[in-house]
Image 1 (cartoon, one colour):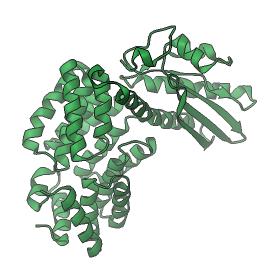
Image 2 (tube, rainbow, N blue to C red; image 1 turned 60 degrees about the vertical axis):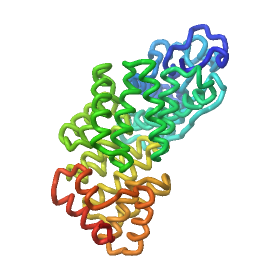
Image 3 (tube, rainbow, N blue to C red; image 1 turned 180 degrees about the horizontal axis):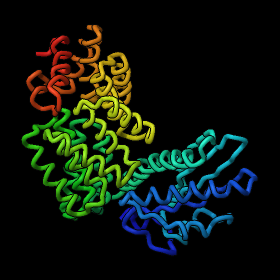
Image 4 (cartoon, one colour; image 1 turned 90 degrees about the horizontal axis):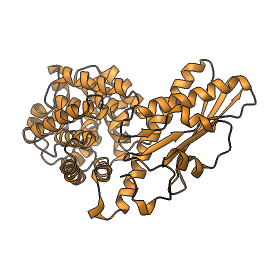
Length: 410
């Protein structure tokens, strides 16, 4: 369960076994009745988009909109709808500009988890509505993960259920270190032991094994069969789950099936267009397929969709690699440095910084980056790179290897 009974107040409706969320109608504070359709449209689109996140229990539009125009207390809304999270917001139009505010509330603790304000020109009303919806939904998802993990950490170890174990696992997975990846896998295996058809646990387990192999933390020959079994089991458990297709895409990527990988990531994004993690991995697969401009655009979209995402360092690292493939070395260097600023032990970013600086003739920067790379990935070698990373084009492989040769890697 998401909360233990002693942690939650008396609810008129019982909380489901998934995080439950209601989106209240956004308030039109423009003083213009004709703007009502716009504020209602924002609320309805957010409800629809959140409903695509299959691990959330989202209250329907008809129930949420019964509170339109009423000054109901947040706790009263939560009790009547049986939810632990409530999204509220407002819309103010002034001339050709609109300001939209949104806030995510944790009703159990009475705290505001997240809030943001968006200012936009209203040249295209529907484009603005779509853009704001994407931004809000992409921001809400990781914030709920953080809140759920906080609850799981407060529970005694013996009382953890499968959901709690997955939340704890994700908190370790997103730290992007070798040891945290091992801990995450152990927690996920416990979750699967409790529920063998738990799709998200299977999906994250597969992804973590492939991520570890890509970073050089694990042997691909050992990890790939484990990951593929878990990913296929996740697909079998729920073919409409974007996490499952993201997992299978990561398996196909790491096992040199790039076209299949791209197809799986695209399916994940069709199921949930706001799935920034899948978009980041999709960018990586495009990069290794030589489609660097598309890859860079996808990585930038992942960053824009979820700027506070725990995985944003990954997206910056992927964007850096895409720019390296495009021979834009200084841009690759800048993006790799941003990834490293966010995650000091991020192996992929040190790889890109090494090769981009080397090809740009910045030998001191390349040498320093290679030293850090050897610290984070002691087994790095030209042979490992040539045999473990899944390029589609031999020219891209040779370009990457040449950067390492110039940096002095043997």
